[in-house]
Length: 424
Image 1 (cartoon, one colour):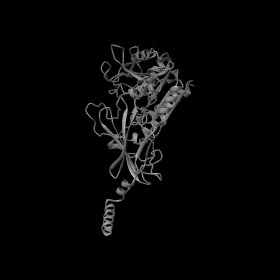
Image 2: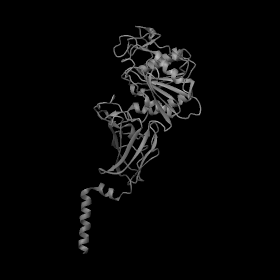
Image 3: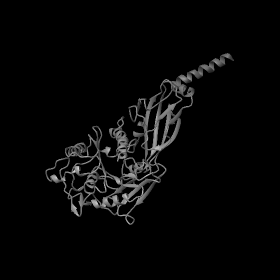
Image 4: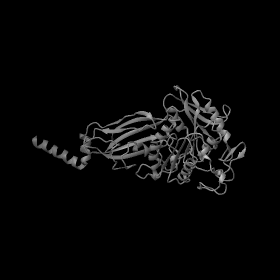
C-alpha cells in the first residue's frame, strides 16, 4: 500500500509539472478580490482599483469592459505582477503588457477601445456613454481563467439632477437643460454648444456641470431639424434667445452666465461675449479660433450674422492675422468677464494653440481687466475640445499602448475648469 501511495504522489507531481507552474499557483492562491473606492460615482471622479489575494509576484490579467449608448462593446486590459503582499495597485503598478503601459489609476478606463467600423444608427464612431452612466465590469484572469469580477457604475449625473428637453414650440431654440433639484442659492450657469460637427453634442458635459452645482443648457444651432443644415448665416440672436431663457430660470444667477463653445463654436462664444455683455459674463473657448472664419463646409459666405448682417470673416485658414479682411480678427478685449482657453499643440484640424496665443496676446496688450487662463498642451490634439476626463476614446486600430495625450490633458484641464467657474 505504501508503494501505491508513493506512486500516486509521483503521478500527481508529474501532472503538475506537465500543467505548468501557473496551475499550481492557481490552486494554492487565496481568494482574489477586486476593491474600488467609488463603486458608484460620477464619470469625472477617479476610481482607485485594487486587486488582492494573489501570490507574491504572481502575474494576472485585469480587464475592463463596458457598452456604449449604441450597444457597442469597449474593452481594455493590462497584465500586472503582484507585489510582495500579493496586491496589484494600478496607481503604482506599471503594466507588463496591455492597452496602456504606464502606472495610471484610471488607465483601464481611459484606454478602453471600441469597434474599428461604425455601427448603423450611431452618429459617431466616438465613445458615447449611456445617459444613465457607464456600467463597467472589472475582472481578473489567471492562466486564462476568471478568478474575480465586479461591477461599478460611473454616473453621468448625480441623482438629484433633472433633465428638461426643449424644442421649438415651447422655446425658440433646441436644447436640453440640466439642474439640481435644490440649490442653496442662485448659481453660476453655463450655455454650451459645439463646433463644425453640428447637432447637440455637449449634453454629457452639461449634466456633469449641473452635478457640480452649475445649471447648464446644451443647445444645437445647426444640423438638427428646425435649424440650418450647415454652419452658414447663423444668427447670434438664436443664442441670445437661449441666454434669455437660461437667465430666467429661478436657480440661475442672471449676473453669472458663461458661454462655452468648441472649435468653430468658440467664435460664437467670443462674439456673444463681445456683443451681449449684458447677458454673457464669462467665455470658455476650447480649441478656439482668434478670427471669424467663413461658412462651413463650403466657405461660400458668412458663418455668423447679427441684426441680419454678415459679420466680417476670413477665408484664410490657420492665419491669426488674415489679410483678406483684417476685421475678421475677434476683438476679445471687449469681453467683460473672465476667459478660459484650451488648445492642443498637435491639433491637425487647425492651429488652435496659435489662435489661443493670439487671443492671449490681444488681451494682454489691451490690459484686459478680467481673469484669463490658457491651458496649452503641446502633445494634445483637437480632442482637447472636450475636457471630460477618464472616458474611453480609442478605436482598436489605433491603440498605441499608451494613454493618449488628449486624455492626459483632460485629466489636468477638467478640475481647472471647475475651479475657474467656481470663482465667477
